[in-house]
Image (cartoon, rainbow, N blue to C red; front, side, top):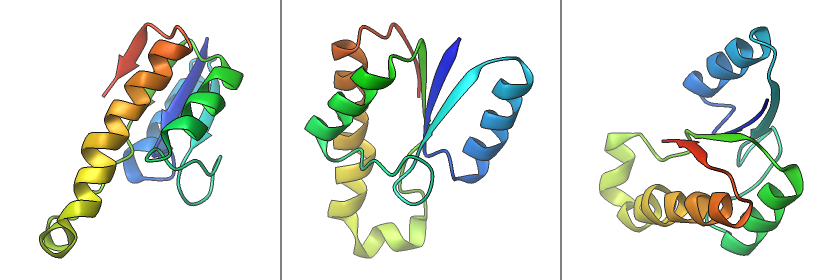
Amino acid sequence: MRSLITGADGFVGRHLARHLRDEGDDVVELDLHGAGEVDITDREALIAHVGALTPDAIYHLAARSHVGESWGRDSDVVAVNVHGTANVLDAARAANVHRVVI
């Protein structure tokens, strides 16, 4: 199975990628910095990228999670956590991916 992980360079993403590989999955890692540099807020680029990768499942872990930073950057948090998640779901739909874990 081919699994795609957004936020793959984060704490959970690194552990999930290792676990899925140990289970025999072909893992594709996406992250804003590092593995597969894709910005989930760029809807069209994300749709094209996911479509080209043809994953069987998407694990969506990309998010802005630092509470203290969110107070001063609320529009960035909404862009990534809300609109970025909608973009991931749109990309999954366009690529006919039926398994998305958020």
